[in-house]
Length: 464
Image (tube, rainbow, N blue to C red):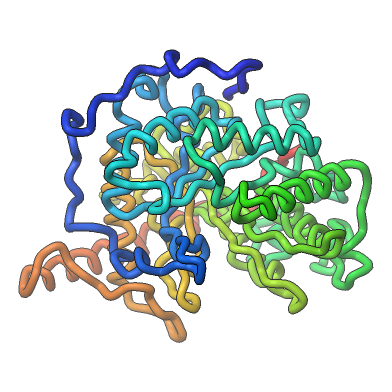
């Protein structure tokens, strides 16, 4: 895992980027993404693009540009990141997530975006970055107000911008107080979400109220505003600093990120009920809306439950569960051996049926981003895209989701559209409907296997 260096590297540390007219350009397949061009004209009353209404349903996760995470240094030092980012922008993926912790992601992304500015100026895309985490271990966290401010301003410099569209405190579970079993492995998040957890036989299942009490999530202002210790104070001070930077125009929206949903929920309530009584704008959760765990959907109403504040925008990260649901999962992945083995076995089973684990995971993980919710996507999904082929596959997966038959009460964001006109377009629509039906079968197979193995809806420990 990367560790941010004590001193920023010089610009000469990175290979020069080729002129755009000499750069191999990958053509989009079937034109721009379905969410364009309508969303390109949505702005705030000030004339600036608005993140809530204009950010693309698919978010480009730039953790793929971190040393030792998903790609070799040879790839990071090539023009492949630039070509991949260019294709994503050409399609209409206009939102990018990064962090100092993903070193040198901010440098690679910033250099590429500045280089692409003649084609895609700053106002045409959104940047999400984070602060507070700078390495893999607890000693690499710094939530002090001075560090938060200096980190955000340094990120702006590295990214070639005067402001961030979203600034998040990174992996808050490592700093906040550990309340009950909120950071432990288990099924607490599943119980809160109301999903059917595959708990082993003979293990008693606590009630939802017992879980709420243990995790500090009982209803009421008294419980929501309770500071459980110095870790909570550190998070509150850090978030207050971000709100001050928001008032100064350095960041547009403020939020937190992390893995354990009970921690994110408790802190969102705490921030909103503590001075200066401003609710968070954005929550980023990861690996909680994927094939082996879909607890995010059940927990969404809890983030929206209080009528006293506007609910945060929920971002869904990592449909591939940090590479676990791919052919080559990273060695550092925190999943249990039982879950890792189940993924390997599932991959072989799906291949025997003529499909792949990665494709099934992609389709499942981005589902929800095609559903309309007055008038924004119900769920925006952040996914790592290492090369142009993965960008093509993400767009095709999204188009396939738009071809499905909707459930009662659902509305798709965009009309179904094939790659060609007239009769040939109908053929494309039918092809995608067939692909969706094939995916639905693979999804059912996957969910069944995870449940039979006793690992569905299970959460690993984080922040301990």
